[in-house]
Length: 289
Image 1 (cartoon, rainbow, N blue to C red):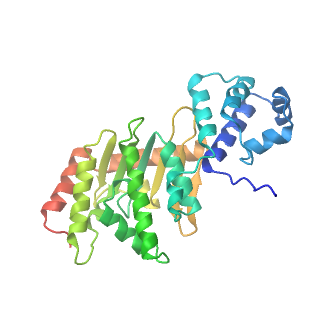
Image 2: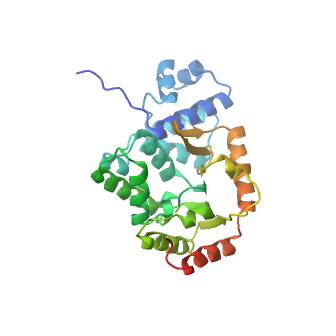
Image 3: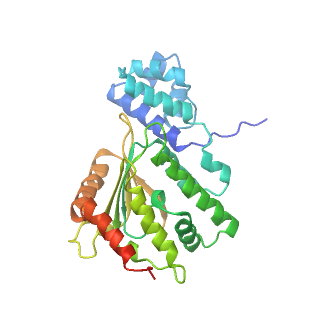
């Protein structure tokens, strides 16, 4: 029976990339590192390129060859190795595209996410009705059943904000124009969504700011992006979408650019207390229509 090719998951790619980075930092060639473990160099190459598994018990000995013994680092990489081949809960829905699956996987492993949202309420803060309407508007090739499934996936993602261990820290800056979106003859959708933002702001670790319509120019004019950070030494990832699909940015210089940009966006936005007041006032204006 032919061997089924291993499909690289985002966790396996990140694990392989980190192992390559640590090997290079240790000044070891692929051949030397493999020899130290009693492996053929092709085995280590496949692991680093996410084309082969590495068992969790083997991670610590390999890292020791690289001079890495920090328990936090070892535990983090062992965790990636343990979870690299697991099927994510979202994959059971059968409607999640590969790029979206990658993002949910990153989100699940994240320690914190910083979001600039100029067009829509971030998915982690959406109500069911808002999620369904916005998904249906964008997923124009999907069936009603698929829209329902995607809505369920989006809502299920929100559990990370209150998970018992290491709840996600979320900082979202939302453009004020988003608060004025219309849902034709169903004003309750936006009213409930605004209330959801106020309720979410009370969740520990959740910070919400509003970018006012009269804000000074800021880097957010370039478009939406998510800055996804992880525990230990895992590199931060920036995610953004454009007409060609979802893109990811990694690397110290590139990530710092977005990190600095988010800092400027935060500075240009209303303070948290004023932001929540702006959301509450929007609700008091009557049924958004």
